[in-house]
Image 1 (spheres, rainbow, N blue to C red):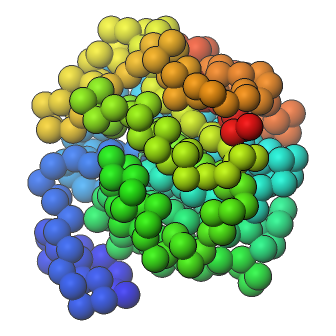
Image 2: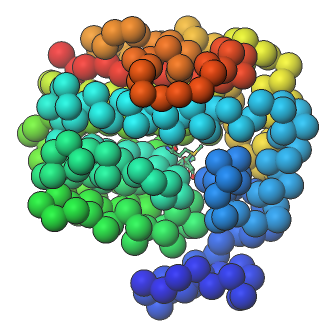
Image 3: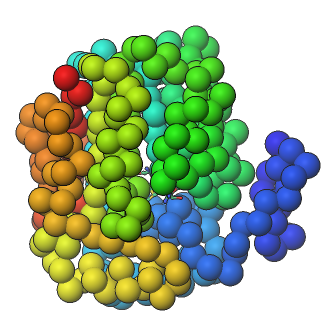
Length: 282
Ligand SMILES: C[S@@+](CC[C@H](N)C(=O)[O-])C[C@H]1O[C@@H](n2cnc3c(N)ncnc32)[C@H](O)[C@@H]1O
């Protein structure tokens, strides 16, 4: 697998195949990378991120809080719930610690399947496949709107034992899925393939606390051809239907099992504007 070839402009060479990185328009994974201070983004991504920051100057807070939630949720699942298999859909550009690094620090045998539909994430998949000894990871280039392709893929079936509980991670992805694609139905189909004792960890942007600012950000994405739909708490709760919520339920991210070791001032709910929760399939 070759590194991204930035000099070529639009394409990367991956195992001899040319991948169109679509530099001319912003991609959520690269905008998110820019907001986190990463370097895997291009002019169109930076322009969209800056326009988003003008619409909502707090736009850097949700990515930071999401990464912190991801760490706490995977730690909870690996340490307290005994989960050793993870399916992380909408994984994003690798950002350390990645899910397998968090899980394998607790259980060296942990296995992770990463899924994303962005070509830039595909070009970085090697960083996600550098698993620790004893564990296993795989990467699937697929779309959450086609759960059957994910669930039936050889990479997934080679890596996860679907007769044993799996931690399904849908972290900051479903606000990129419009109502027409029935996000609640997609979650149901994914969970239906997993046995009892599996878990769902999910976060989602909301306009509940600062509707005007988030409508402004969504409009920036829309102008670039990207669907971004913030949703009210009641809609996000529907993704957890039929599951047993882990305490403290679906809450503003900093309130989900805060880690006393994490220092810093708690951002306000309006600054965060993301709900997150973890739930168990009975
Ligand atoms: C905001 S990033 C979140 C990354 C990571 N989960 C985290 O929380 O740090 C959203 C990711 O979802 C991916 N994504 C968006 N729509 C998707 C879809 N329909 N299928 C698969 N991945 C998608 C994007 O490419 C991006 O990498």
